[in-house]
Length: 292
Image (cartoon, helix red, strand yellow):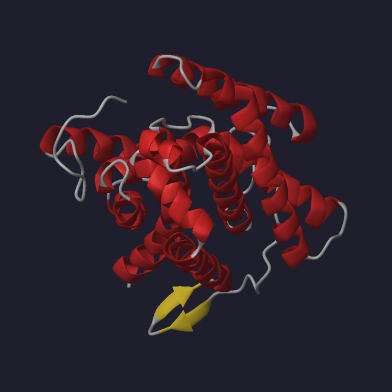
């Protein structure tokens, strides 16, 4: 019974980690850079939805849609403020810039929604009472989160497979120089990439907020777990990020249930270290060297 509950909880968390990890992968595949402010984009998107839904009384679905649009707009601002000015700079410059931007967003979050360590409750959209399914106690909000995350992943798959914008992003990810030579506006693709990535982070935030209270410091921990998912699946591999997200969520839940609650917080670090030692390219990554 305990194992079944831990697995269901881990799958729910893993779906959210996978969604955030996909946002990281999209940025990395297109720009060859890791966005270290991605966790703070998650935080800001969640608080925008909180302000709309809780403080101003906007219904949940419109709050989600408005927050996603606002998150995408913040992603565009990230492109203008961070990436566009450093497009030809050394890779370390982008690392420093995105880390600095994450602190800017965290400071804004603390100024607008609370100080360090302050938690903000987000009401669930489903009945908080657990229901029994196949002998397992499941919270309806967990089912909402899982369904929402899977829907977004399916929608993203269709976007990349059947839309012109998605195919343009894939072409740019394969070779920015070749994309530029065939007439693709690479800078516009980069801006769209940041926007889509930030919008995904916002969706994950709005889905996760009813299960875990929001705090201005939530971004770093989530970034590490999503990064562990990308390392586990293979950096730059989108299906690998999805699988890695679910595996991280399940491992984290099992560690918290069978080892200690404190082990749940370090599970992501352990996964990163083991994978880098055993298979640095990840489960689905291609062997070879690439400058990061």
